[in-house]
Length: 115
Length: 108
Image 1 (cartoon, rainbow over the protein chains, first blue to last red):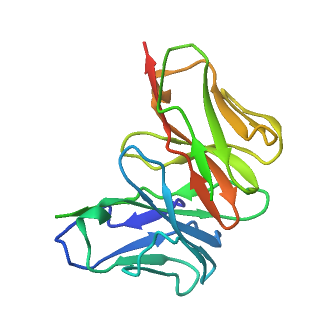
Image 2: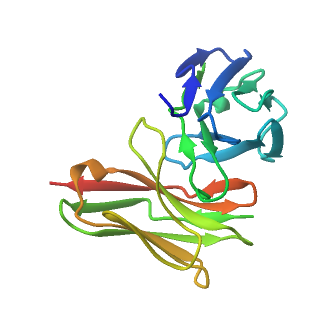
Image 3: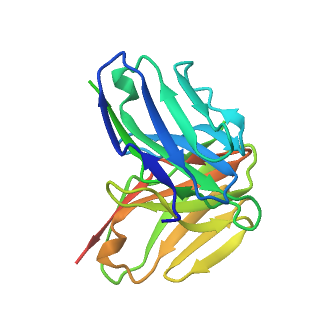
């Protein structure tokens, strides 16, 4: 499969616990994005990587959220001290600049439920 | 900041043509994209307008008018499988801002 993959697909955790999600982008894509989506809403931008550099981070992202892309390939998103309001679908997307500008390829998402 | 507006719901019958509008307020952007998302699925890319005018891709077309801060997605020959949510998104700087989505229901 050459698409974007995410792991796990579902996560149930108790409030206050830490969770970590993984995203594997399409191999030749140097841009990687994380989004959060709640029911009935569009994806909300969280952060963006170009290769291993985190170039932009949403002001909405609290300091409980951190993302890494250590070797410019896969990325992880960690949420510390989870809150019930963190329950959402977390989407990862990748893209290549240039001719395919404007096109993002999304993974299947990780659905998080915080009890 | 950037904000986009879309109708929340649209209903049409099989074989019909439907237009989903998107208006935006942004200080500047590279282009307008459209994505389709079925329930429980991931958004998938449909169309992109970097310049004003119409882009056609099979049954789907997209239009952009920067002077009017407006775009639309046109779906022709509707099929039941087109029932989904449709999102417009502006590419602004290093990130994408998505609209709230329009839920399209296609009736037999």
